[in-house]
Image (cartoon, rainbow, N blue to C red):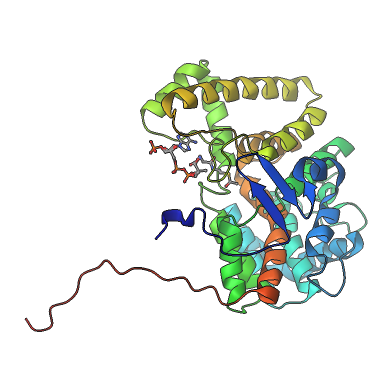
Length: 358
Ligand code: ACO
């Protein structure tokens, strides 16, 4: 029995490789830093899905899928807007057909991208903005959020984010998606499993709390004192530590590079400098507090800053993680279906034995 399944290889994949000792992430042959700097979200989707469907999706097909999701689900949106944002987005996904076709896959990829800005606008009483299939995926998400086109740098930064998080080995949500896919349930079921696993704060739910932590430290004024007190109380510092990486998470640097391009306004620049101070201090304190456990910055720390700079509120951060990761879940689900068997590990019974003779 291996608690947490560390070191257990449960699948072979052509999709991504995570090297936790060297701090490297390769996605279909490309280092994540290069992918984030050069690819759009649509290109990353095509890269991941290539070979898992009869055709490779184009940017135009992804744009059309955004429109179809909007048109098919707009009627239920006001009811979904009454739920927690992530739960509303997940409920929208649950309403999509549960098949195996490329069209269905693209609607699943489009759903978090459309429903995150749509539900945010509904919740704040603003007019809805329909998707525009003619513009880029990231640029359209920003347009649907703000009601006007964002600048090119913002779209580039969001593209870099969506690409950076598109796949990451057999993490908890991808494993959940593969388990469901292995039962031959449809892609919607597999994506819902991934969405549910991603929600937790130990996985995709951390970037919102990163902002809460930065704001609390800013209000307190003394990063070292604030962080040391949290560690003394046994709390975890959000945005640090990782199950696999024993060095810095390469995605943190990919996002920091994207943020530097974006951080042109004095306010954004100041926030980045402050976050870097917090990061340095947290790393010092973690080294002192846990000398035997290498704890470094993970993807969530700079995710929080990037998504904040693009204009998303913290409650939307996990939804955007899902918008990026859905293509990875779908590629893994199709790979599991094509190459794997039903996933069915065993448990060891350590409960009581009833004494039937008594
Ligand atoms: N702050 C303080 N201490 C920490 C942190 C942290 N961020 N992370 C781990 N530790 C400590 C644990 O308390 C534990 O100490 P102990 O042995 O004295 O009890 C030790 O390091 C090992 O912790 P584990 O829980 O075994 O580490 P695991 O590999 O299971 O956890 C995880 C990884 C969940 C990411 C953890 O580091 C954490 O909770 N981080 C904060 C939340 C976070 O940033 N989540 C996003 C992860 S990135 C992603 O999933 C996309």
